[in-house]
Length: 488
Image (cartoon, rainbow, N blue to C red; front, side):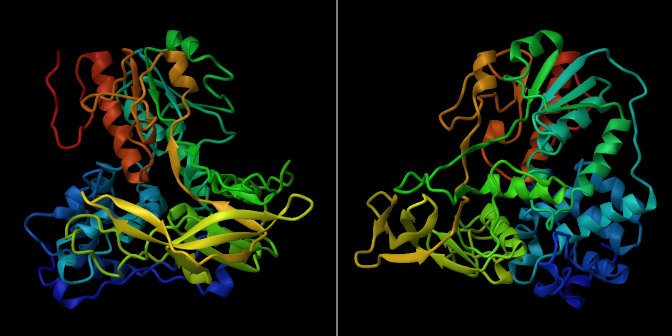
């Protein structure tokens, strides 16, 4: 590192937020960029640690010390080249990734870690601003045709890598625009959708074809697709939502979080009318589920003008610091407070929803909860126990179920005769991402289950290598951590 003592001289500094009263008036991104000299200082905090554990913390294996050093030296174009060598879409991860690399940062053992994610975002934004990110279509084509099903981060990464290898790639998306949950799920205040469109323009100029509004397995039989293409890559995601099977779950006002979030994305994009309008305006909103999706519902509800927003989490309140059984450099399950939480939500831990209460019209008007505790049984398994005498009724006009996902929709898998694993994901070899049907590969959440955007991109890149190798007998595409396998 150019500034060997930087970690001793500079404190961690992240992008500040616009005031709550201003940012909740619209759905724009609300971070205030740091100045260039401030970013250089943050890059200087990377401490030449010898063994950069951030590499192993990052599912993509990003070359973090290298681009930090380039930023410190003001070599932004070099930093962009280093970053894109391992990450197709740093503008997505730089906004949305929970940054496991920072939890693995050596400096984080006894100080605040390096602001890796924010540096990453500023590198790619500088690269777009300077015009360094341009379409780079392959010089020659192999003549092989590949269909990628699903245009989320896994599908987009697989498509770009396979296109770079010279194959003809078509991406199928059942929604009206590409992006998957990046477009219809992630609130615009976390990532405005022109960020996706800017990258899609590059991909299209490189030769990738997008066919939207086509639901494979419904609009187009999967077997027909199999005969038309030399290989299929399934990147549809884990989209089967977890329900809350309690009394009153069918009342008007009990809504799945993704229905609420996706509708608002479309509303921000200009759509005016919906068959079933879901709005938090002037309502007492309770978000059930304490993860990222729950946080997104909180921020969206405030921007729609909710009266109150309360967040329920059935788990106990985590510790502020690392739990003792989750030491550095592992990812710690500690208390995380998002920007949306800071906008005025009440958070309640160790609470379970027992039933929903409706009025004579069938509309939600409240819900009943009980406090719970987690008891460790012999053998170490945790058991949920309701605490007697803690029932409470809450006013509630809109309950948003942010309970995660249970697996993948299996229509496509059934049509192709693909095997599933016990978690309702499509089963594939961990070595080459290929299913039990030759020529059919799977990547992302549809293979590993609900996970992070950075894992989705990593899976798409890995799968692309193995598809290329399957078609051509070998591949020059990068493969994380394994080097090139011999041609066969």
